[in-house]
Length: 593
Image 1 (cartoon, rainbow, N blue to C red):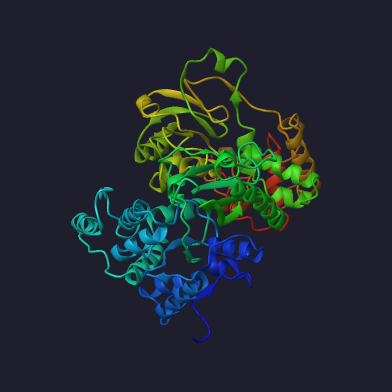
Image 2 (tube, helix red, strand yellow):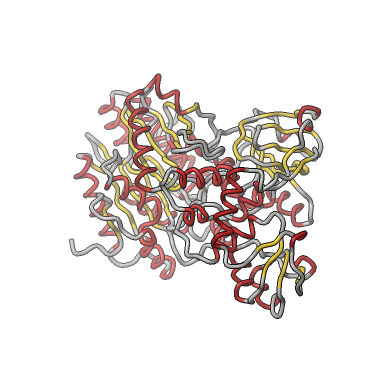
């Protein structure tokens, strides 16, 4: 056909602009260019999404390009979409240019039907596996495409009974052909860009609304095929502590959504040594290769099918504040990055959270432990336990400190997580939704505490220690760390001082000057107001100064110096404001406390 306008094939021969193909597709293209084992894929570009949102319909030629893309996947895999004897199934994954974890929707097993189930069962010699693939598709299609709440598709059912349930619960019939279902799924991904949770996330992180999302269509591999199959997530370094050691989880006989949903508790990735040793060795080698090639810690999604490793995505890993500092400074010492780049890998908010109070010695030993789980994001959170995200948002807006307690979180809980001092869950592991989002937000999180363990404490004041995985009764005493006593923080401070374009003084060492105390001025918490508030001042303290925007305003106002303690968040904000820093979409999302 003529030159492609709305889609691109991800064959590794080119690395298109991330703004055009989104983060997930860019990752696929990058890994294929490195000759790593990645299922073939093509992408519907952000340009097509923006056009769709503007018109309310698909742009001319998009359907034909998708058909051509599917034909290319068929040729690459030797399989046929929607037909036997060797059927092709695909995943439909959204991916914006800037990472938005949990915001977009993924549909697996696209292309399954009653006839394809029979063909897949015959090919694999396992009717139970083929039936499970079919059931999982209905689960995802009902939830993501039709937004159908409460529909259940029991394993003893079949396509006819599942379709009847879906029509009864949603009022809509599932499209009759795999092609129609594929098109409807792409529609759903496009529309999810303007969903409530996506808009809320973009507003919170200052992400533009006009970027659009791309849609990656990728040949399926199956982690739920047999005992030699599974799925998992691997970090090339520990995202909680920063230790230079691979860290991850693996769930046998499962698909990717089983891990990230938090509905199942996976095993440490090292368990792969016993069950799929060749795939484990290949994964460790790929982890090193990807970190070296990308110059940053990687978050890798993978599937093992019959003992063979397949990589689905690799991106710069979100990391807890302590890990961000350790990784940045160690990578400088290793010669991987420069001090200037290191300063772009740690946000002022992360440092501020790291220097926030921690439990005083002896407090934990004398306290009552209510429950414990897996330490998923470090820090201390003290507040009243609430079990509803709407309630958490409402009570926090009234000035109350709250702890969000859920069985497990989903993207629908984002507003409650934004409002909470900590998040605690009864299910899930270190790569569950609750864990990943809490680390991005920089709040304490403990997951997998056990059934009935955290929601039972609704209304009670608790202290959450995200570093130890313990939840204590009452509000325990805490203390603030010393930025000059921590080796890595002191090193960051030295680097930031060397390039920060404006002096930063602690209150006890500030020279005499006309100083504006922004904390006493209404609206100073918004950096957009600072240019007016700082006019005519010689120096300032408080407000939104410890942000890149705030320090930019201080520079524009010609301040002689700024005042704050600890000084590092201000120095880091000033250093970042004074230089152009690289795009690290998953690291540059500031952790909001």
